[in-house]
Length: 388
Ligand code: PA5
Image 1 (cartoon, rainbow, N blue to C red):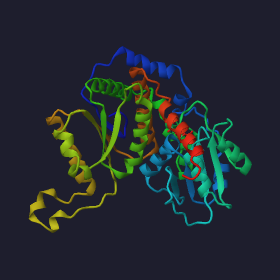
Image 2 (cartoon, helix red, strand yellow; image 1 turned 60 degrees about the horizontal axis):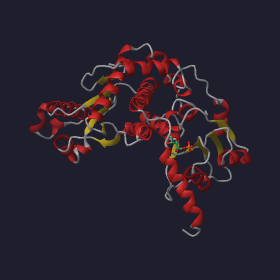
Image 3 (cartoon, rainbow, N blue to C red; image 1 turned 45 degrees about the vertical axis):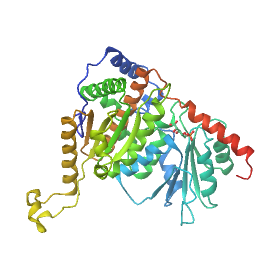
């Protein structure tokens, strides 16, 4: 148990190296803005009353890419719909977005203020009567200029927090507050620092992943047993991939939805090539529907009247049992509650794990040099191809 609401079954126990322990205390001592944003001491640079006044009763369209939007999306689907407000997430380029209302509140999030997809989406979607709120760095950029011209509300994105580490800063917490959640309940670092089980598990997981990676097991398969975790896993996928995929190193995160994938890739996972390690994610559902097995067949008599969650849970522990029998490396997160504290702990666990892995692998977990290459090339092609 790493906290009251998260049970974590670790990979096989590993000796925790002094180096990784040192790296962790270094992070806590030399608090960067990323680490600060995980604690209740962090001060958000917006006035929620003002924001709520601007948004009024309008539906919210969050427009952003990658780390600028994945955290808010993870929060939204983890909790499902809360309150009356409706949120739309514009996180890709598509001609198929269909919006029927006359007015929306557009919440545009971009640290650089120059992300092509975010700019294009805003320009395509923004209507005359819309309200607009921008979260962007206080540095000259396309979106800052546009926001100033539109006389929109501008909240300054923290200069020292990159997209994929920004979920507990203004970037994720302003949308969370509009959804009806309390930012400081997510910011659990102050409690985590005192929690030996959490910290030991974190270090154990870092050691295990490093050791698996040395054995050329670089595919990290995320077995997702609850559809409401899908965007949390999308967030985690981006965090690990973009942070660690450098210098011919990295971990390839692959989301696999189960039990659906039991009937697709599971055979390969169990008996195929052995370059994977696995993380199980199970979230307990309180109001799961009952399946009345007994009514229809003697064959299912022993099942009694189980709920859908009972079936899924038993499939999960059955799969873990088979993995143990076949000596397939895995860890397993059993999430007992849907609240801000639990989700905050999960965000913090994986942010710290990624930074520690980056340090151990000697890569900079905060940059993404090759993503920049595609941006530069796209700009070049766009300017020489006027009709395409
Ligand atoms: O994690 C990151 O740094 C990236 O995924 C960025 O969030 C993404 O590229 C969008 O960048 P920006 O916030 O500058 O629009």
